[in-house]
Image (cartoon, rainbow, N blue to C red):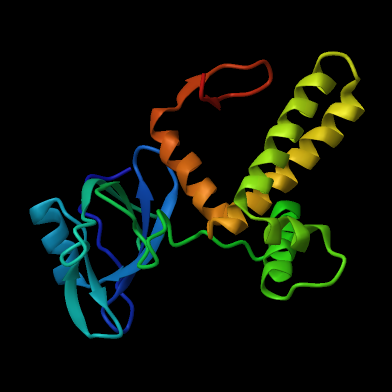
Length: 216
């Protein structure tokens, strides 16, 4: 190891990519670019500054939205050509209002696929579709079904076996997704809320694991 100052390797355009991570939850929030001035301003002010390649100008994160980022530390990768900013964000990082710019998956999960189908039924009603009937019946009917399915989960857990419990939980999840669609909400909204709660997570040890996040 050496105490010599680290020389950041800026590219031919004088830029270096920057990964921004929430210091409280470890969630990756965004990727941006810095030039030497942006890096200097970030170090001097303690707030994240970047270089906009589209506008060709220096910008402070949150200057207009108020969603600033206080920088806890700046890490440099082994090749000195990428930076990691660990920050305390004052609000959503993404211009869409999402907590993170990385809210979409290249390969959708089963829940995401199911929710996409529900949204399709909502936008393109099909005769005979249970989902369409439920959506057309309105929120009160959906809430009634959610309540019924929640009770079915409790009864299954009290003595109907694991297979029945799993089936009833699947029914409940489906109806909750229908409720989200009816309210104009999305799975990403729920994921953002869970990620936000991660600020309060505390580590607990489990056999065979080095760390586990617990909400308990």
